[in-house]
Image 1 (tube, each protein chain N blue to C red):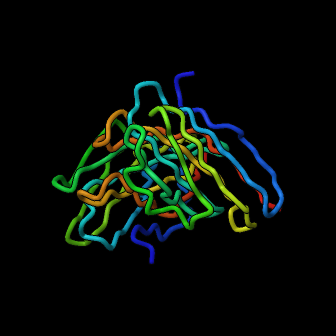
Image 2: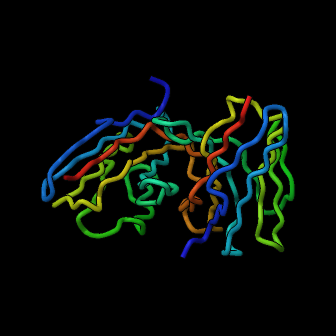
Image 3: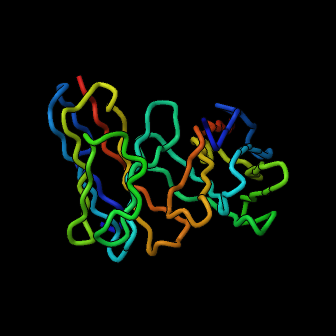
Length: 114
Length: 113
């Protein structure tokens, strides 16, 4: 497809489990972002990749959260020992170059931790 | 400490009239501002942007105004259409601080036919 693709669209898990969320950006986009959106709030920055490297991971809430982008395209957000407070919609976005001000968002992965 | 604020959680406007969505920010280092629109079950989509060196940017029915001294920007939609009903997010980028975009909490716009 032409847009940013995120899988799964919905994930329900139990407290303490491990979760992986995948993002496939628009082809050719070098910058990739992860955001988290809780109910009634705006997207909250987590991490930004320029190519394969994490250029800014200052938004990751703690060391249970980790993200990779090994080949500079697909990215995986990994959450260990999930907590109920991790429940949110996790949004991925890409942009064609790092100075581009426009982000192209996917539809998000809704994570529910029971 | 919310750096980007949208103090109106919701706004209702009659079709054909002007919609004005407001956004205030606290950090004078923001150099670029964007508006995104979000429909239910979809990701936000880019609408319009403005650099801090400008005070107005227009694109069709959408105009964004920036008042740097007041740390305030607004999005004007005229004429409003029912398809404009969505949640609108204001976002700002810190100058020379990577690409960390800070989003406001959003305003839900309802355009009534």
